[in-house]
Image: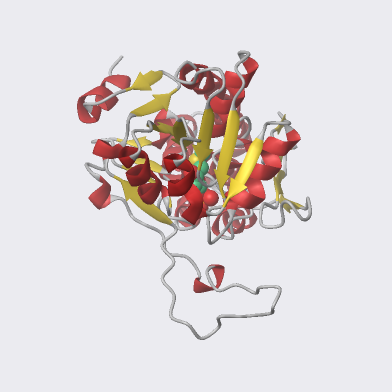
Amino acid sequence: MGTLKGMSMEWTGDTLILIDQRYIPVEELYVECKTFEEAAVGIKDMIVRGAPAIGATAGFGYTLGSFQFETLTKKDYMDKMKEVKEVLAATRPTAVNLFWALDRMEKKMNDVIKNNDLKEVSKILEKEALLIAEEDIKINKEMGKNGAELLKDGDTVLTHCNAGALATVDYGTALGVIRAAIESGKNIKVYADETRPYLQGARLTVWELMQDNIDTTLISDNMAGWVMKQGKINAVIVGADRIAANGDTANKIGTYSVSILAKKHGIPMYIAAPLSTIDLNTPTGEEIPIEERSHNEVRFCHKSKMVLDNVKVFNPAFDVTPNELITAIITEKGVVKPPFKENLRKLFED
Ligand SMILES: CSC[C@H]1O[C@H](OP(=O)(O)O)[C@H](O)[C@@H]1O
């Protein structure tokens, strides 16, 4: 049995431990997942969130399912593992990493089940889930180095949502670029959008960056345009949940607005994402499923105890930034520039 520990999750050999991101920064609580159902709840309820972290969680969730059913006959096991994949796949629709990880785990299971007993199959699946998680950290560091070359000493970067170590197994995608630039000796400051309604920016990005002593200024989402106009921002770097074949990118709600503001102010708009977030099977952003979450995430209890419990609400959790508003897509294989349709496909050709 292998083990692994990152900022967002820990694998102990038979348990997936998730930091409960719903309570950060007020409390650091942890949730133990010992079944695939518990891992599924972890994703659906956003105990863990962020496209690569969701993918890694799905890998370990699939492994937990195998542990649960390895005493069955192979036929019954295969039927149960189909259900495991369906339950995990139904948790959240937008981040393609979830489906990429589940397809990879299912393929591994199908490749080895003929010539191995089910206990051996479970061990092989655990190794594959660990590989997904270990690769994620390595990929983020490679991506970070690639993106760091785009930043100059003294730059200030605007971030939106959290694409950091908490959104991955560790190190982060967009925040990985910032970490890599600082590790290379560059002085980088961050303006972090709070990112209503779930406040991943205010709660998670600020918490992460302050732990690394990175100079961070928190702003409300409606301040982004004004700080750009005042010349305070040199680049925008965000993560992604799904990049379509033409470069249209689904990311946290509000990213589209930020990309229009960046265009208006001549500020480069960078997406940082691993190849597992690029979905060549989705032609354009029009085909990306956009998750709608609970309206209660928008209703809020203010100090004044104001609860907007009877107001109509619309809560799309993501939006799509058209490729023409994206300067470049930073990946572990290099920085991809337009034309995205042609250049994204090339990433998968060798
Ligand atoms: C490194 S991908 C992070 C990506 O995921 C976030 O969405 P959520 O917090 O709802 O899982 C957001 O879109 C981030 O950019």
